[in-house]
Image 1 (cartoon, rainbow, N blue to C red):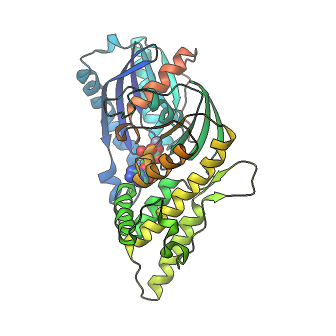
Image 2 (image 1 turned 135 degrees about the vertical axis):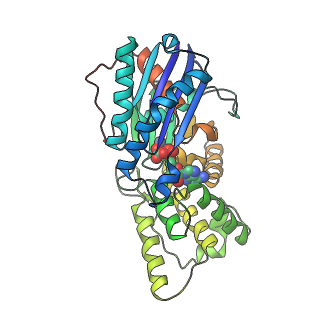
Image 3 (image 1 turned 90 degrees about the horizontal axis):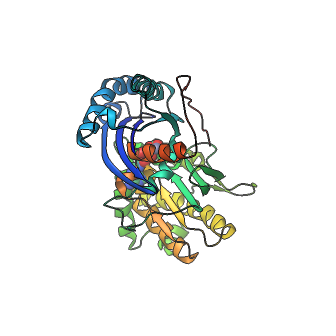
Length: 360
Ligand code: KG4
Ligand code: ZN
């Protein structure tokens, strides 16, 4: 069957066509209109501007995606749309567009949770996938994005149990905000990654060996770990290290002192990555032998990839890291999650609404 999907939860309008046959999921088209250049002027996403840009792009992208897939609407068997979580105005654009298209053409409709979408991206056969095969549930999934840092037990294609999550700020949010202090353009993730590489190189180490350096042991930068302890559920909250970094920078500024940007980026990256790995390690011990899937925009981070790869090897867990093209927000992941929701008997109708809140 052919699935047409819509993703408009934040600052990217994405429309995709996916061909699904059993568990073989093949992308036919995936077009994305990024709004980053507009929001960069403001240093972050402006929700009202995001909604308007989605309205302007969505119709054009739909026809572009169908065109690339060499299909027309009459070939589409299912429409999938992100209904939550995200910016409410932005989500409403995708949801209303998808509902209208489904109703006008008599095509079944399903709603998709954006985070489940990041996980379902792992089921897609992708030319850039270095594993050449896709994971089968059960497995553990780490989703690291601008708004979420969560670990799930994926029991089945549509059954997910949340094992660890963020209480306040997610990893991507922390990289973006601290990156801004380091004069990196929004979103700072990729530039932060490169700057941290320069920092590790200056110490002659990488993120895995940084803890053995004198610099790490005697760092004047005291940042709390995002891995809070003492709770029943492992916590991955980045407000602590982010706020400590902001305060530190402000104090240095007041004293007219500067910070070595590359070394600081490396230190912050180490604290962030080590925290995530510490909680993951606990969960891999709790579920021995389960494979581990890593996705979401921040899964593009080379240091996180390296650290988690080492951890998975140590714990003898088979690791599936998503290809870069499927890490950030995209339409294919929504089509994949929508397909499995449909197989599970889920359907949405004209009463479907968007919601800003988490759903899993
Ligand atoms: O999943 P995503 O595309 O959107 C959300 O659902 O939030 O993730 C976007 C986040 C941004 O915070 C961006 O800075 C971050 O992913 N990001 C990275 C890297 N590439 C993108 N963070 C760290 N290192 C990267 N290489
Ligand atoms: Zn996302």
